[in-house]
Length: 69
Image (cartoon, rainbow, N blue to C red; front, side):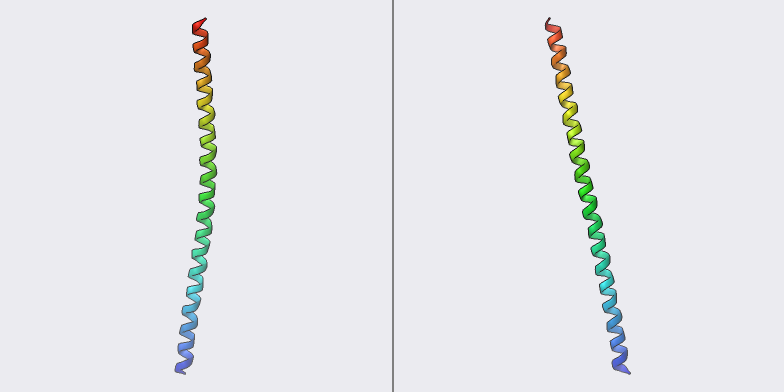
């Protein structure tokens, strides 16, 4: 009877470990997706900033050219 009780306790503890590992792996996968999405957003934002800066430089150049005429 004692051996059976020990076996049940060990099986229960092993099950908890598997569940914890699965939960941790799922959490890590979600975080990886969040990081990837954040990188995409960062790249898109950087591109928009670069485009805006280029437009501002072009407008400043055009204004300077118009002022020299």
